[in-house]
Each structure stands twice: as structure tokens, then as C-alpha cells.
Image (cartoon, rainbow, N blue to C red; front, side):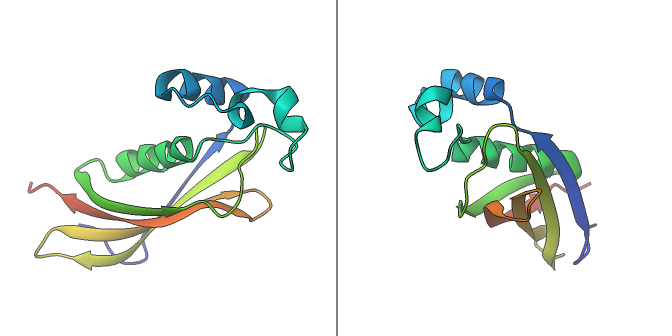
Length: 130
């Protein structure tokens, strides 16, 4: 079904509306995400994405490219910020396949256009029998 080395890419431009809507849904209204004036005075210079919003972008790509699979586990790190107005590139790559268990391990990397990684990890997927 899936093969090691298969890769998929998606992109998303981050907007303040994305941050505000995510804050309203999650209840995480930390000013670093929703207050441009506050964020301008921080080391980030602009509002930054919620980590779980970035994870949501990864989940959306996983659902789009692996529609018959469910996530069994996911690990994540957020080494750099993703700021408002930045394009985020979502890259998925199959790194292991276990045919008998109907599982695939997928590397998930989200990066800015300057190459800096903003979210990285791996997910274990299990696909449903046909």
C-alpha cells in the first residue's frame, strides 16, 4: 500500500485570523499568539503560531495523503517559531512500512521557507483493511 521513501508536500500561509480562530477554539489566548502589539515587543517580533495549530496542519496533510489510515501515535518537537505572515511547508515521508500489521511510520516536518524547522516528529499510522 505505502512504500518507504514516498513523500508528500503541502503549504500554508499563516495568518493572524488563523491564530485568533485557533485561540477562540482552544482557549489559548496567550498574547504571543493573538496580540500583535505585545508580540512586537518580544524576541519574536510578531505573533507566533500555537504549536497545536502546526500539529493540526500536519494532521490535515496526513488525512489528505493517507485517507485510509488512523494515527496510533505522534511525537513532536517545536524547535523554532512560525510567525504570522510566514509560509509553512508540510513535508511527509514514509520511513518504515510494516505490511503485516498494516502500519507505516511517517516523518513529519514543517518548515519555514528559510529552511528553519518549526515542527518535527514522526507518526505511526495504521491503515484499514480493504
